[in-house]
Image (cartoon, rainbow, N blue to C red; front, top):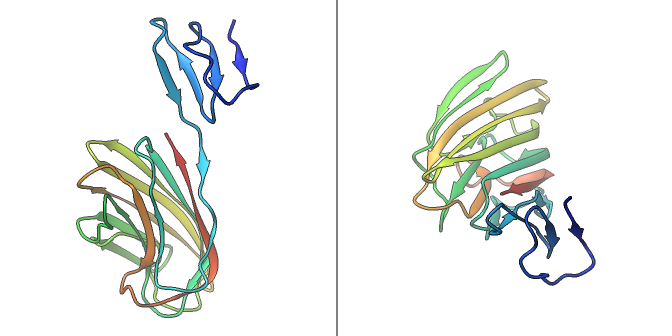
Amino acid sequence: MSILVLTSDTLIGTPATGNLEYNGQFFGTDSNASRAQLQRIASGTAVASTSGTSIDFTGLPAWVKRITVIIKGMSTSGTSNPVIQLGSGSVTTTGYLTSTWQANTTNANNTNGFVIRGTTTAALVQSGNLIINLLGSNIYVASGIFSQTGGADSIIVGGDITLSGALDRVRITTTNGTDTFDAGSVNILIEG
């Protein structure tokens, strides 16, 4: 029988085999009584995408194995496509092997990030998710689906990037880096 302890925010020592304890995180033990942290899904803080040229989520913990970038109603002031970039120590702006498909209009290969729009009209608004998974050896693979108003299209994006170290940051910007955000909000979920 397993035991779940939620009455204290301090460790209760090494729990018996199969037990769990709570200290802001969940911990479990295996048959050798070694403790392993069981990661949970954690949410960042939603950020309004109504100004500025980029939105950064930094300081991601080393245990992160999956990140979901969530975009709702995001729009930009110009015709440069929105792009999601990853980084380890700094944002990586080259070396991506990605492709974007926009229903009934365009296909595009990209090397500067995960581009989430194919056409270039400032009035278009995107909503959707990009899910980024650690494959191993600092290789991250992403896929996502977005809706786009104004053009009433769906956008599919996928690809990969090899970083110099463990991913610790995500940036949402535009391919030219100078168009500004003027609507919507973005957030991330992280999982271990």
